[in-house]
Length: 369
Image (cartoon, rainbow, N blue to C red):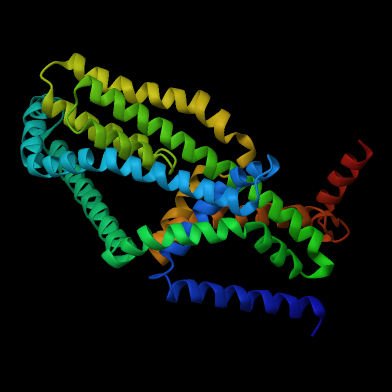
């Protein structure tokens, strides 16, 4: 067996063992994955403090304490309001549904006059089936997250273990990277370092940039909807901002939920139009300013690829898979571009000796040109 085949077999076995371990241990990995994600996001701040003269231990302590303080203050300020609005929303949900039905009923009657009874019946059945599937999918997804990733034990471990994991990973981050580099195959170390650098650039650009976009959008939606006077505007705005991490999902969910609440609450169409305008303004600002400035085109992660990665990670590994989805998607994207680059430079792509006659003629004309 050649050396290349032995290396390929070794890496495939290692990949299979890693995936199997993640699948078997997915129930206890949540605080460690979350801690690694937080440490990855905070590492540049520690590096900057080190450049300003702080030791790594002091920089890690300061950054961890400030981050924990910000999280605690956010929870103290937001959790009571969010809890109150969530409980009130559940209590008033039947009344909201009835109010929306009463407001929409005249429009449905007008629509029925424009189409035949058979067409109206088909539209109604299709809408009911779609709504039923959407509700079932949502309940299944929420139930899977709760049972698979955010059960009580995991939630407690997330609260108490994640800060500890974050501190130690953040303190030893450079040392861990150095040890991993020392284990790289010497013949391919430079190539692996280059691809790791590209993956880090892609991942850091997307995660840090998109997290900032989500924070700004969630703050804007929550404040604007609350100022308009929309019931549960704080919850809807923050949820829409958080879900904006998945391209287009946050805006769609927030728009649909806020419009339903606005139709049920407001008697005039001007207030409803203002609620709709808030989301149109938010999307315009995000698409034309926030995402280009904070995320940029260099990330090179297609929205469809991100959505697929998040859904696949959640289906395979639960909430841990959701946390791992974007890093894995970034690495896979870089490896695919690397493989495509190697393919276009190989004889399998450029060799025209055994190609059809027409292809050889076209290639020769291009070479002469």
